[in-house]
Amino acid sequence: MKEQGGIKRTKGTQKSVAFFEKTSWYHRTKTMQEDGTVKYSKLGGFKDAKEAEESYARHEEKFENQQRSFQMNQKPTDDILLKDYLIYWFEEVFSLRIENTTRMIGAYTIYNLLLPSMEYDIKLKYLNVEYLDALLEKVSHICKSAGNQARAYLYMALKEAVIEDRIRNNPVAETKPYHRPKPKIVVLSKENVKRLLNAASMEIWYLETLLGLFCGLRKGEIYGLKFSDFDLKEGTVKITRQLSANFIIEEKSRVKEYSLIEKQPKTPNSYRTLKVPEVILQELQKRRQLIDLWRAQLKEKFIDNDYISCQQNGKPHSLSAFNAALKKMCIGNTVPAITVHGLRHMFATILLERAVPLVKISGLLGHSSIHTTFEYYCEIMDEKEKIIAFMNNEFEVKRTGTEG
Image: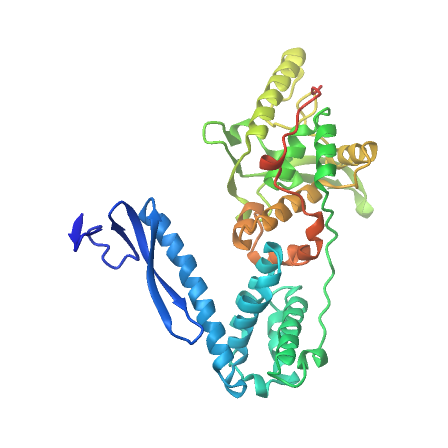
């Protein structure tokens, strides 16, 4: 550790933004004044360098936004580029009046779809329908939702530009429209989630319901889980397989019979290791005890594949069994009908509301790419009032029944 003028710095980190002074860690700050000058200061009280560096990053982002806003307001309209205006509008206008979910989808639309697709920038005053049509056409090839979503954000941004008298009219209104099929996503209220989980706790499907809702697993992934996939010490589960149907076809394309077989996960990205909430680990232990009881009762007639989800003889449940059970539980407890895939969608919406980045949500869900995640959830922003709080922290479900 080196000391320079009463300031301690870690050897080899002279360029670090964090420094130690007296009893705590500090970092420099910059603040934009109304007259455009910059005020320099320092901020301390941090317990370590990492905390100071994280604070510095936040302050730098705030300063850059202040600087961008000042420059945008000082720069003549004739000199403003579309790219600069989109960033200014999103960071300084739009983001101030929206929720986390909307901002996340908006940021992806601006920074991952629109800006990278601009082969050349254009000044606002020269913006026209032809330029925008070409831009949107390029964006639309990224994924099915991209054209529709990018057009919507361009319209909102340029509508603001008209209000600010930066341009005379909004050319987006005359561009080619892009439509997208909206996925049907059921998002249960907090009260309905309580009802569903309490109902599930009295059924044999409680563990499977928790895995869908808290881990976002596909039905085939849940069916394919084995006790050996769980690490109780680390609190994790590895997704390395799925169960899917294997059909035996007769002549004239008629199905003679089908069975469930183990297959690789849906996509290469579906191989993943997830942290598992404590409630799932508790239910896993109860499930093991139940299956041990079945095994003892049936002896050699029990088919042991180590599956955590199985019938009393050890064979996997039918593919339709889980959805049928969910439907029955929903109807019996006045809860809107939801499927196994619906539980997976709810897991994603919970994470969106908690401002988890799309790229991380994509990884947790095992999607083939981040574009797939965007495709499904870019409309979730319109469902804010339905998005539930994260169950692990917001309420505790008391198990009132037993499996069997």
